[in-house]
Image 1: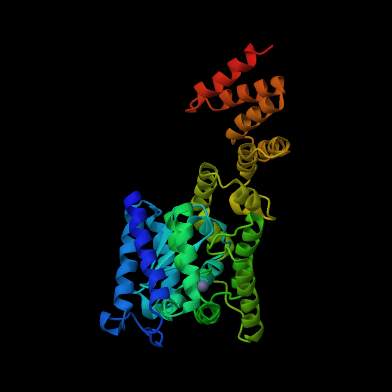
Image 2 (image 1 turned 90 degrees about the horizontal axis):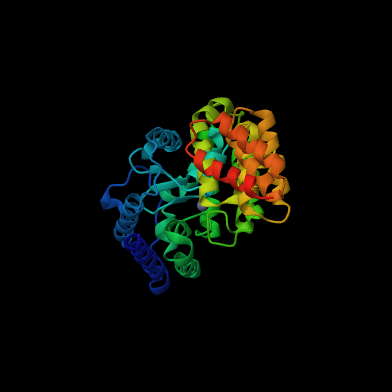
Length: 388
Ligand SMILES: [Zn+2]
């Protein structure tokens, strides 16, 4: 891990230093029109691609990728539909990380975090993110960015944050929505929008998906240089897609992938996000996501259990009461989802309701006779018996 991080750091350092130390070498470049042969790369571009390929290796070896070939193939198919002439140039991979994030590297590697995948509601929304990220590659923003003095501070910022926020965040910071210049962002919006229309997607969903990101940023009060960290930038994306939508006067897109079919495809990933989110401690993000309108339809009716877990583990003032309510809702709507009884039992124990706690924990043991945590729950029950 240290090794991985230090290699990533040197990659980022090269990125930052190029921007700071050399400001005159990058020439104006035309966008790629097809998968570029290495002879099409100019000046420092081959080296930049080499560094990005190194970073790819680091990410792969670090075990951050989601081992789900079906999801990766699906992401790639959406990208190929958006950019058919770049089939071998852009490689999309899902990252096993619960945060809402996506980033493009200068060599055409596109990473989409599981957190973002779990939150998008339709293929068109997913396409909006991929079309935007793809535009950064096709228009060679990663390379051009290095010629901008202004961007140097952003990369220096990424360097400072790297130690604190970890490898992926550092990578993302160096090549994400927050990292590119305003003009490059607008270009990515414009190109991404046009690609969505050409591929038959509902381009209006671009507004919706960036709204989801902006809301999340606001709820989390994010200040880090992540994908959605910069609130004004994210608001700019929404505004920019709204304007593009207003100016567009084509026929409405045919339904590409019905929301229900998309939900079915994403169901295991959404369930995985709930588990990972709890394990990774992203309670604020989970509470935000699970209290949105339509959350039960999106994640399934047992979300009350995960909401209860998030409140329970966050432990702010009033969270015990909120957890209690969430578990009870989960039990009402899905009485066979047994973990809710355990959650409610522990919550009642915390609240001092020993009779209620005993009843719920006993019900859990009855309903889940083969559960791995039987012994652990029995210990709780023994404690409850012992107390006067
Ligand atoms: Zn962008």
